[in-house]
Structure formats: C-alpha cells, structure tokens
Amino acid sequence: MNVTVENLAPCKKLVRIEVDAAAVDTAFAAMEKSFQKEANIPGFRPGKAPITMVVKKHGDSIKDEVKRKLIGDAYRDAIKEKNIEVIGYPDIEEIQFTRGQSLMFAATVETHPEFELPEYKGLPIKREAKEVTEADVAKAIEMLREQRADFAKVDRGLATGDIAVVNYSATSDGKPLAEIAPTAKGLTANQGFWIEMKEGSFIPGFGEQLIGAKAGDKRTVTVDFPADFVSKELSGLKGVYEVEVVEAREKALPVLDDAFAKTFEAESFEKLREGVRRDLESELKYKQNSDTRSQVVKALLGKVNFDLPEAAVANETRNVVYNLVQENAKRGVQKDVIEKEKDAIYSAANANAKERVKLAFIVQRIAEKEEIKVSQEEVLRRIQSMASMYKIPPDKFIKDLQKRNGIVEIYDQISTEKVMTFLENNAAVETIAATA
Image 1 (cartoon, rainbow, N blue to C red):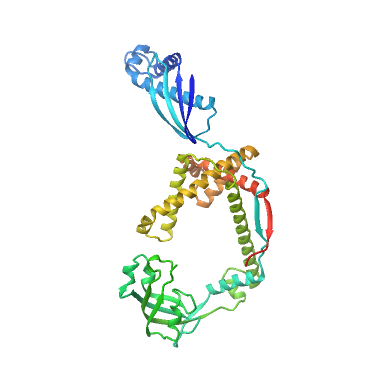
Image 2: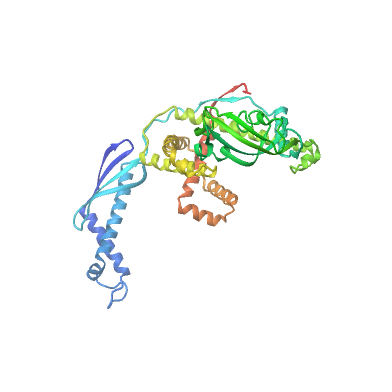
C-alpha cells in the first residue's frame, strides 16, 4: 500500500491511498468464497454452487462489498501508518476501483490541531477571603419571612410598603404602548397587577405616584423610561399610564418563632437558622469553586493560540445555538424576537464554541501527559446517577446513550472534571480581601 499526505489547510489533510492490484484480487477471491458459503442457487445444496454461478448472480453485491471493505481497511491502516489524529469521518473521493487493477482513492480529513502545551501548573487564581456572617443569615431569613407575608385589604390611602392591586393601560405621545412594544405585554397593559409601594418597584417613579390613593381611585401616572431600559422599544420614551386602584393591601410579616420555622419544615426557629447557614455556606462554596474554575479556564486559554478544526467548531456552534434558543424559549421569549436576534445569537454561540473546542483539545492533551484516566466504574456510576435523576431504568438509559454516542460524552465530561480539579489543585492561589 502506498500512502501520501498533503496539507490542505490548518487541521485539514488530503490522504491519497493506493492498494496494489494483487491485494484487490485477493480481496475479490476471499469475498467470492464468503458469498459461496451462503449462496442458495437452485439445483445445488446451500454453499455448494460453483464460484462462476455465484459470481454471475451476486457479482454486483460482491464488488460493492469488496470496495467497501478495501477502502475501510486501507483508510484505517493509512491513518495508523501516518499517525494522523482524525476528527469525525473522512470525505472519500477520486475512487478508481476494478478487479485486476490497483485501488486508488483520496480521503479528506480534519485533524487534531498541532500546538505546544503551555505551562499549566501554577495558574494564577484570586480567591476572596469570604465567609457566611450572621448578617447574611439574618438577611436570608428575612427573605423567607417575606415569602410568608400576609396582605390584608385596607380601607385607607396607600402608604409606603403597602401593595396596590391595579388595572392599567399606557400610551406614549397618544400612541398605545402595545403598538410601540408588542412583545412587552406586561408593561403596556395589565389587570389585577400587584405593585409594592417602594422606590424602584415596577417602573422607576410609578409606585410613588400612587401614594395616598384608595381602592376605586383612578390616577394618571407618567414615567420616563430610562435609556438603558430592559425593553429597547421603550427606552427613552415618556409613558402615560391610566391607572385604576382595585385594592389597597397592607403587608404584615410573621413573627420569627418556632411556628414560623415549621412552615419551612424545620423543628424550631434555631434549627431553621442552622439550616439557612448550611445552605448559605454550600452556596458560597459553589460560587467560589465556580469562580476558581472560570479563572483557571481563562488563564489556560490565554496561554496558547492555535487553529481549530472547522467542522468541530461548526458542530459545537450548532449545539450552543440550540441550547440558547431552548433557554430563551423556556424564559418565554417569543419566536419572532429570537428570529430578529439570530445573527447576534449565532455570533455569540460561535465565539463560545471556539473557546469550548479549544479548551477540549488542551484538556485532552493535559490528561494524556498527566496520565489522568477514567475507569469504566466511574462512567457506570455517573450513568446510574443520571438514570436515577431522570427516573429512567439504567438499562434503557444506557441504550439511549449508545444510540447517540452519549457514553463517550460522559467519559469526556468526567475526564474534563478530573483535569480541571488537577489544575485547580496545582494553581497559585492568592487570597484577597472580600468585596461587599
């Protein structure tokens, strides 16, 4: 077999392969015998028909099978001989194939990028000297207290801290806001909407203009939408709201005692405090670990640049776009809004995909150098955990994974986690003062 390799572009090669005529003839002879064993031709016992009759009946199928097998075997041998790390499947073309002649074909392949692994030990990490304080616990409990607040109707004017239940519709320069910003439905008109009488609630300046109003009162409220307002169509406009106060409600917070704690399934208020502290400490640890990992990734990516395989980036971009669109849909973003932003979504997804692909190659090389391996037991434990989480029988979950090459994905996930933990454990950590 003769193999030549031509570089077409970074991470792309053209592999030309020639298999000599003798090997082609040998492959034909072996395939004909294989067909002969299974052939069922009238007048002959199964497997006993003459080769000539088998070839006459199954000649095209024999040729197709020889071609498929020869190309597959020759391609794999060529890649191994030239030590080419291939990504995905080859594009096979320029095929010359017939009995009695050499087989020649070309395979265009994408390859792993070539780069020098940077120094990955001692990456600089800054970690805040932060801990959960009594003030943090008190603030969290106050948030739980707000969840259990009671809102009793009152027959008086609205005061700071009260809740106004209102109906409203809005215009700007006489034009309904619903026409100006059709996707911002909650901002243009509403029925039975609750607004707390405090600064910054709902739209800046809105609630303050309802102070003193009673149930049944009607008021005209004017607001100036900030230039950086969340709804771009309304940014910088003046809004005029016709508001009807349906109800005035006074907020009453519960007493912080054992009865309050039991509404959160805690034995006592002290047990609730202990649980809140544990949750805050877990949350803080998670945030610190997440921040450390982000710093490790940023430092690592900044240490080396290299060309990336186009197909790998394109495939990852599609995955990121899909995830972004799904996430926006879950948040209630309308399809037409997503369609308008498709260019921005693709641009952001492509940049994100390039970082992911780049990181994956670096992590793989570190795993090889440090001999960081993933055992079958670790993969199986992860699969069982996921199956339990999704409430799917493990056997069915494994079959579903196999259909979409998901087991390899899990292997890669575990390997990446191990490498990231290795990098974090070997980072140069600087403890800094905690920010507010």
